[in-house]
Image (cartoon, rainbow, N blue to C red):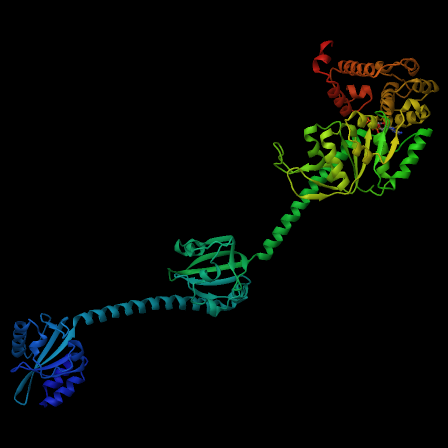
Length: 634
Ligand SMILES: Nc1ncnc2c1ncn2[C@@H]1O[C@H](COP(=O)(O)OP(=O)(O)OP(=O)(O)O)[C@@H](O)[C@H]1O
């Protein structure tokens, strides 16, 4: 530009006015200085602005040179000598005093007998600023080019695969190295609620992946998608959420795969799936599995209890006998079974109390649900509540699993409180409240559960006496004793002995696979003469032993020597309560010595005594019989 304009000016013989007009057109600050007078004859607008002087023509050029006059003279000579020259040595001074670092480019112009210096000024500070701007623009353009290249790559990829991408059920989107969205398929738009226009060119992490499921901020630098292309590794994530446009979380699993454009990393493609429904189904399935597990556990325990019952009762639940006492009991069962009334069954051990409870349940409308027996004499006071109400894991030391209580298992059926007099006194109030309110809580759990059970209780002890003695709560006694049934001892209903004998003999022979021996009249007489302290259970044991001993011939009866005293011999004896107690203790000790301390099993002391092992255990405990007493004389 400088060279061009100067050439034009140099080649013509122009008036000063024409020269002034011409330099006005030049793009650089330009001055026309008379070489003889040093006066500025013309200046363009750029020069006026640069030197901050509106009236440059007519002023001395030396005014804008400050102390640089000597340098100008040298420069002028150079121009004079060579016709043109340039310098960066001269610093101009603006009117405000600001020094202007400049490059001066000058040519000599001869016109109409005058010589002028045509000086064009390049403001070096401005020049540098422009250079920088050019560089920045260059870089920016280059960046844009890069970006455009990546976008074109993705576009190309998208257009080539558009059909496939849109047909895919999974959401698919691409991001470039800056995390800006480069394409989004149809499924992604419909899952996320954002359109392609909303997302393209935007930081997609900030739009759909900004928070964790718990609501905490999810910085993009922690995002596996970014890691995947920064580390050039595929990332597979199964438990994160993307956020829908309407702000709701979408449970997703996704894969982020780095992609390359001619071996240069270009960004990543993210393929994701909305797994909200699947997770919901998984949760429901999990809940269902938990319920099934709880039910299984409950059934297992129910089964365990029922097995226990079966083993203890052994025979089926039919009450055998035609005596008036049995007839009366059957009538009472028929009467009360149809109601929901609580029943209290009393009678000596082995008289059939459990059988009556069972028969009452079987004849009731609850027969389809189980009857659950709680042997109150066989549970330690410490575990009583847990046994009855159940507990949750961690409710107390040693509670490693949840446990369903018997009361819950009996729900819908019958709760049979056997040996009810043995419920610890301090728990009787709680139990009464639960049975009355029909609600309970498992130990360690505050949730209240409803129950629907019918209560049948049994006691060998005289409960009225227990109330008088203060070991049993009166209110609980009245609650249970709505409908009393008394099981008479076997010695008071000897008429049942022939039928019971045949019945037990048949059962034993079938079970043990033995030929059935003949029951003689003498057998019956002998059986009816015995006082049966262990009642029907003892008779059952004697008959079973007889079946084994007889080997198909006549029934051989072998009463245990402890029981050899006949009813007639005892009839005349009268003993005090204390004597009875001593006798009972001696009897148990003697029996345990015979069985070498063994309580349960066929050859155990309980069997010999004709009582249940649990009952014997509780008596041993009650009488404080110690091991030494058993071992002492053996
Ligand atoms: N009338 C009966 N008909 C058939 N079997 C009977 C009869 N009475 C009792 N039994 C049998 O005698 C055994 C003892 O009966 P059960 O357990 O019902 O007595 P219990 O009074 O509950 O005894 P305990 O007080 O010692 O628990 C059981 O095997 C039972 O089947």
